[in-house]
Image (cartoon, rainbow, N blue to C red; front, side, top):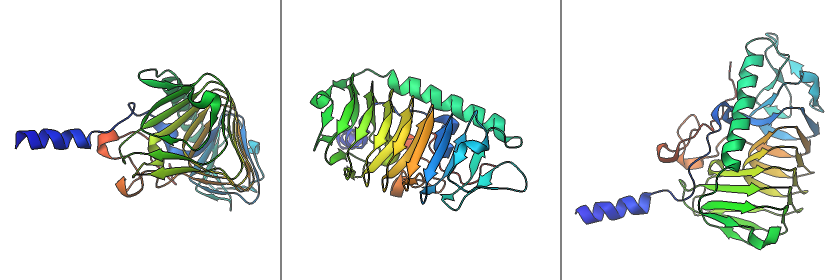
Length: 265
């Protein structure tokens, strides 16, 4: 009986690196320090944060400011748009979220244990990624569909020292129960999603994130400069799918602060 229990525990154990804690940055579909732009019609499910810039740095959204002054809304967003010049408590909340985003970037970028190095010499095509840490010291270009294969509690971190470019009509497909909320792309350069590409995971970019026409991202776009969208879809709720609790948090076995909240205050 004891042997059976030990075997079961081994099977149930999650594979991959320790989760990256997003802190309060996990409350947002998009964070950008220098603004968010859209060429309509984009479709964003989740809240947006622009800080330390003003709400005028949301362009293309046709915003409507709420009467209480702490946020704006847009027909392109199922959620709220927050900015550093909104009324209190928004500015201090956003300062914390940006700091948490930067802390998460440093954490994810600093991992090194058991890393797979420079897979494909930076050109990635048709790869199936098991749970783990993957590191490139170069640009990474994804030229055809790839797969994330693992359980609902497995984790993945992808470290890219330069730019990440996803070719048009290229997909990152989840298999085996893998969850988008357990996938982190930490990119020191710019991230570009080609037209009609479909991607999964939390994107932590030290520079900019660009999403071209028809691209869709099941995850979060967290940029230390700007996020630009062209008729794109960003879906941040349900990142843990059937394995989430009612408020969208991760399973207790691999819990991290990546919850979706349409109304922070």
